[in-house]
Image (cartoon, rainbow, N blue to C red; front, side, top):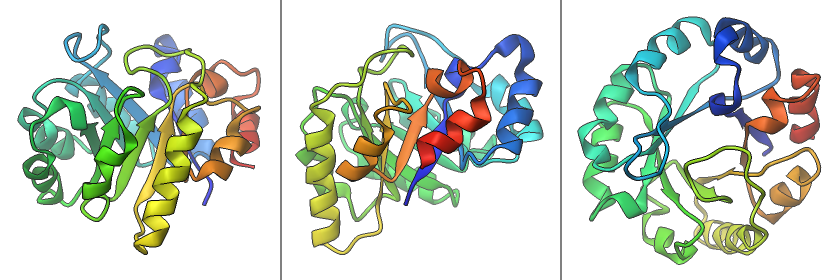
Length: 214
């Protein structure tokens, strides 16, 4: 499975409706939405107000990635605002299971995320309890960073464990994805690639999406 979720973080917000029209017309599978609070990560992006125009103008599923503290306070609001999937960081909670239940009870897909400095094995106990895991291949908080090569070993370990247990859990990768490294990342076990600059900063964004998916 080769899916791509362009990251809104790299879009031109002065022409947001135009950017969303491009995504709608493209072969992108989802739209990835990075929510940063300036506390869990040293940057602030956007929150609930941006969800309204996204839900109105974007025909692709909204894949929400919460880089925030206390996600349990907000996951239900993002579900109600139109999220198709909601993910949060394992490092941001003491116990992810109650937060996952909040999302599931809204009928929204669940995702559990780790930063590059978190051992991938910490995801293993939850693989049968989530729809997807997101492996950050850069440290969360900023776009335009270079892909961390050690991520490939994490992906291989995840893929092996998921396949061994016969699970359908998807593996998503976010950070430093380009046309040049996409095939290698897919081959290591990824199902979904998040791409920001590689799509929105390309001369031909829709072609870049197609190239990454191939």
